[in-house]
Image (cartoon, rainbow, N blue to C red):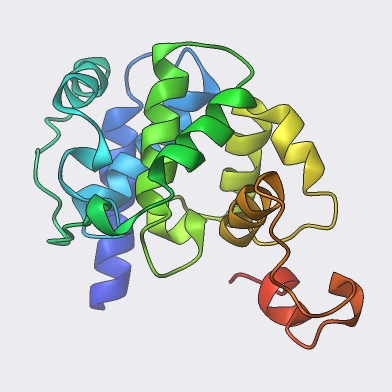
Length: 190
């Protein structure tokens, strides 16, 4: 078996253990996907899944069928000090949250940590597809997700929202439709 197939098999096995208990919310399903990927070194989430220790403990308590390590298998260590927009991203997501809950705060923390990665947001979070990320955002932040009506890549979309909130329009093209970089913002993410 190739190394890639072994990683996928391991990830699916971990996911099955994580979801062997009752899954009460869609967030638990997405968390299980992210945790399973993180445990095999996929994604860019750092130690503690990018969560505060108390949040990590709460997540671990939900998934007792599989002991979740505190350190990232990938060895990723993200430096939040280089993320000047961390607070702005948190505030953007909180403003658009469907509910105010510990689950929402956990999703926000993980999304913000994923924004520090260098791949597509769904990959950096350890989700298995862009569709999962779209569903997660639509469930937790429906008004914000609805603004992405042209299917812009999610990480670019979030940063574009921050720029627009500040009244910054850095693109030189008069509209996205005529921009030479259109494919980088709206192209396939596979």
